[in-house]
Length: 124
Picture 1 (spheres, rainbow, N blue to C red):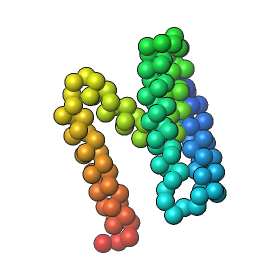
Picture 2 (cartoon, one colour):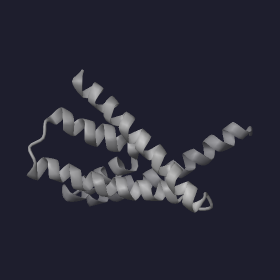
Picture 3 (cartoon, rainbow, N blue to C red):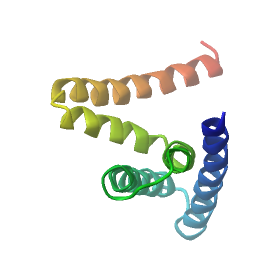
């Protein structure tokens, strides 16, 4: 139960941070290129890689707090960071082919699903 509450609390912070950063970036750079989402995804991936291994290999952190930060905070900030971390772990485990399939399929099927959803919403 505590892990769910930790994820919820971290998620609120992550989502609000993503929203605030999006507003800030769009205020200064506009919306002609999705720069805010790009920055958030890259920053989230960096933070996930750094914090994941920092909290496993170098710091002794309460598991519930770690869950709040990684799954809640960064998950709310960007799920792209989780996607990148999963791909990295597959490569580190020697499952490079599976990682390539996972990355390629996620991107291609994700784009296809977005187009299909838009097509259905607009009416066939």
